[in-house]
Length: 259
Image 1: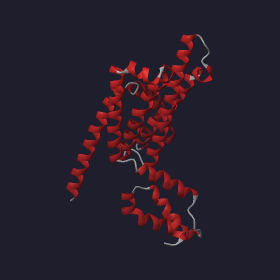
Image 2: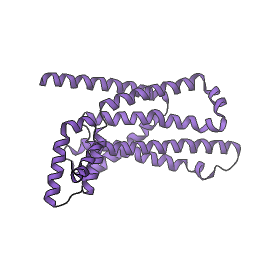
Image 3: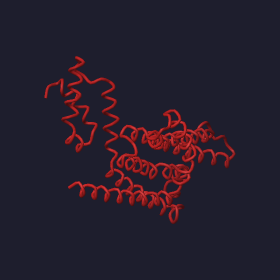
Image 4: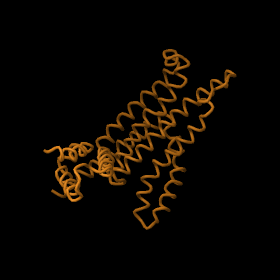
């Protein structure tokens, strides 16, 4: 492979190995033909971005959804055990100051992050979203979780400061700002699959964007409340594992019919 071809071949590394084995040669040939026709020997910025977005999105598959669901279930179970029987021991081990924000942040980030990856991966796998849309939804969802972690830590610090009668500082005083940011990004994450569903009909694209985001704003607080406890996250993880199992069986049946 020449250095000219290698520049384009490197773009295919964004894709999973299985995809490269099946479609890599055709994709590389298509990019090289387009480049030769335009008289260039390097990929365009649009080609590089498309390969990154589509390739990373293709990695969000059923296998990843299943593993992340198991991870969310195990983490939720561990946090549930801590809350039910070992909360005071955890505070003693970590110290009051650390445990006061570490436990809320762990509850707001660990299992919800894996559940977000699992949900997006499952929706991408069943065709509810394209790979780039799935990647966008994942980025928005993870950003929402980051804001939720900041909100949890800021609220805890502000609450302790108010209880002690001392100023909470900029961080503690702005927990509502972090909460608002989390809701907006969570709404965006929910809006992506809703937009894919609405745009498949006869709705105008602008109307589909507006309606999907409004629906996302209504759904986001419900999702935030649902994932606020490890018990609910464990229930969600079990539901996702069942959904993965059903999807896997349907895929096997479809392959059996084609054979």
